[in-house]
Amino acid sequence: MTTILENLQFLRIGWTDLLEIVIVAFLLYRVLLVLQRTRAMQIILGLAILGSLYGLSRLLDLVLIRTLLETSFQYGAIAALVVFQPELRVALARLGQSRMVRAFQRLEGSPAAEDIMEAVERLSRARLGAIICVEQEVGLGEYADTGSAVDAKVTADMLSMIFAPNSPLHDGAVLIGGDRIRVAGAILPLTQATMKDRSLGTRHRAALGLSEETDAIVVVVSEETSQVSVARMGRLERNVSLERLRTLLQGVDPASKKGQSSAPTPVPQS
Image 1 (cartoon, rainbow, N blue to C red):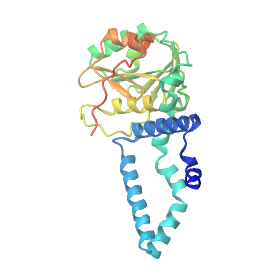
Image 2: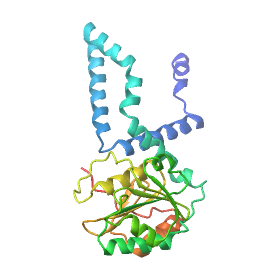
Image 3: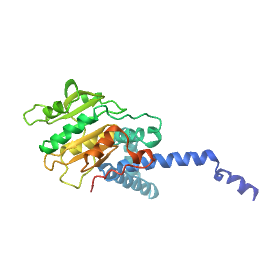
Image 4: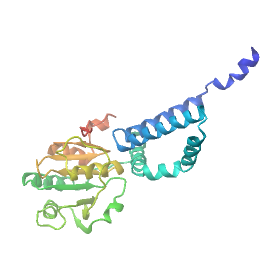
């Protein structure tokens, strides 16, 4: 009896074991949030099938199949890094945007909030499409290289001129840092999520893609519906009023101060 109890000592759980379980569970939860309803989930299911097949080959002593799978698994880690590169990038970015991390960061509102709001109102009224990215803690230099440098003070007139139909930069995104327009005509990464709502075009997909990889606030004006949407932290809030836009740009979201989500409307996905 004593020998059995001694052999079961490894089942005793200490506080360090509980800490490890919580950390691993949190990381798995964040990974699943990123992978849900994406093509990566289908790849994971495929890997699960291969793993089951490998277990069956060992059980039935199928030497040829087991050898082929073992050879494939040797390069599995490298292949996974290549296949899951977009998802891993998004996962790490979202981890840096979690509430636990943001608690140690000082997020300030945009000093050009009023000018951005006025420009958005003009563009919406004129049914002119636009995408305006307001830089926060994470720099947007990587995406600035895809556009044309402007380096001009943010004004409603300047933003309206950039997104005018005859402007050569109206199809791209404007990147704003502080009270300066850094770049116009920038190309943003498209979200990997599959959207069920067909009314959401390339601008909305680009806004979501940037918000998944950075903490930027991305304002989108729809050319078709003239509605204003805001993407942040990988979620899209649609039909945003000017007052709500002011709240988001100035960084004084009342719900955030209470430790709650500001309840942006998630994008319908298949």
